[in-house]
View 1 (cartoon, rainbow, N blue to C red):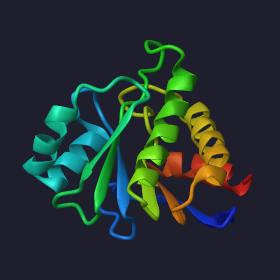
View 2 (view 1 turned 180 degrees about the vertical axis):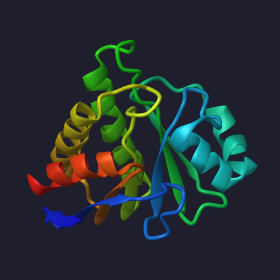
View 3 (view 1 turned 90 degrees about the vertical axis):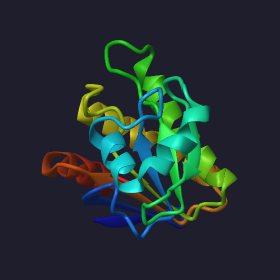
View 4 (view 1 turned 45 degrees about the vertical axis):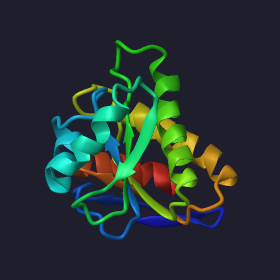
Length: 175
């Protein structure tokens, strides 16, 4: 499902974040050490190969809300933007930290003049953020940032489950 907001195509799709050849950058729902992990971080690191972690090591650790950018190595993209989302119920204020994740990821994409980027549902897996709240924060933050972006033409949300996809589709329909 797609829509256009201020000349930027916004799409929601079910899929594998590590297999998004139609975007220049993918966003990693990273851990503080930027290491291989479960979920998104595991999928991206496995597909990218060991070079990704070697490039990440000197950039770690990062704090909740921060984002760094690396090459994509064996992924079909040019860049990986690594964001550390908040752990729900532990990292406070979790809503502001999650906003910062999306805002800082978009800042990193602008620095590299990225034209297309794919986001997972940051913090909603092992970090326990309720999907509906997280979706609302992600959309509100991105829509607020879009007018400041000079290079982005396409933004894609890649969801792992059908249930998450439906929540994102409902939010996209309101844009």
